[in-house]
Image (cartoon, rainbow, N blue to C red; front, side):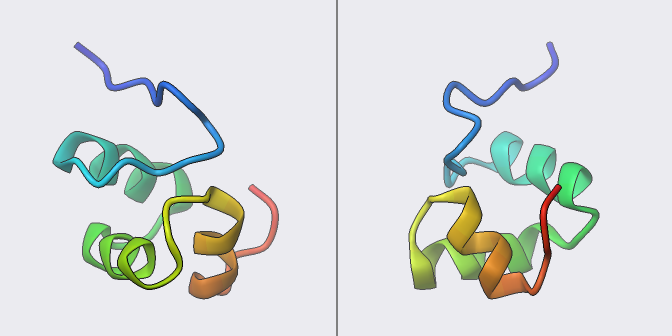
Length: 55
């Protein structure tokens, strides 16, 4: 089954969530996990941390 984020404004720290967001943001799951650890689960903050503008 395809992963669908329960809240599209937040990134869950689960492998299937990290894989989903890695595909969505076209970046490495490890980078996303580190960004979530550093700035929290809010998608906008993670995108800022990764230097990604609006998706």
